[in-house]
Image (tube, rainbow, N blue to C red):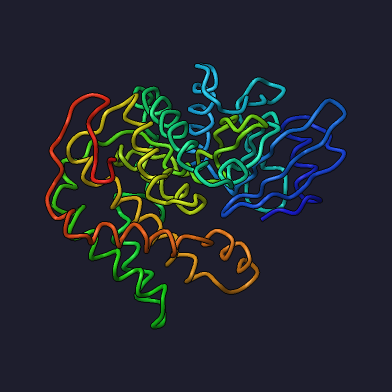
Length: 342
C-alpha cells in the first residue's frame, strides 16, 4: 500500500495532476485516494503491477470506459497526457505501479439510502434493474486477456469457504461456513453446470454502488473483481449486500431479483440458485474476514464483515423451510420467478 506522500509524485508523473491534498480511501488490495486539485477532485487507484498484471488492469479500465460511453453510471476515466486510459509508473524504486484516475462523483455508499424501514426493498428493484442493464452490455464485451480467478469468484465459492472454514476455531463463523457448504450441496451443485456464464462485475456491494442526494444510483465503481463467471452471481451478490443493510433481508432479495428480471429474466437454474448464491456470498464474506481479523487490517476486516452473519442466518433459515424442497415452476419473461418470489 502507498501512502499519500508516496502517491503524490506518482500521480504527477503519470497524469500530470498536481494534488493539493490526497485523502486515503479504504480498499482491500489497492491504494486509493481522493485527490484535490485547483480544477476539481479525482478518484485515484494505484496497484502493484508488471507486464502480465498490466494487461488485465488496462482491460478493466477499457471495459469501464466503454460502459461510461454507453451511458452507464460509471465514472469518467481521466486520460494521461499522451491519451492513455491508465499508466504504468516504473520510475519509483519499488515495483511498477498501475495508475488509473476517474472524475470524482459526489455520491456516497448506498447504505444511507436504505436506512428507513422498507427502503431496502424499494432500492432493491432499482439496483436489480441497473445491474441487469449493465450485464446486457458486459455480455458483448471481450473477456480478460488471460483466465482470472480470485477469492470472491462466485463459481468457486464453495472451495474457498471450505479452505477458510478449516482455518477457523470452533465458533459462529465456522458454523456458518459449514452450513453454507450444506446449502451449496443441496441447491447449487446439482445445477451448477447449467448456469449461464458471462462477463460480470461480480462485486456490486454497498461500497461499490454509490447514490446521489436523490437516493438513485449515481456511480458503479471498482471493476477489480470482474471476470467470466455465473451470470446470476451479478444480482445474487448485489442482493446479498443489500440484505445486510435492509430491515427485511428477504424483501431485499425479492426486490433485487424482480428488478433484474424486469430487464433480464432468469433461466430455471438461475431462479433456483439466486438466493442460495446470495447466502453463499454472505458466508464467504463471514469466513474470509474472520480469518483476517488480525494485524493492521483488522479494522477493515471487521467493517467488511459487519451484518453478513446475521443476513446469512435469515436467508439460510428460509432456504431450510420444507416448503422450499421442491423447485418452483419456471415462468417466462419478466414474470419468471424464484423461490423468494412473492
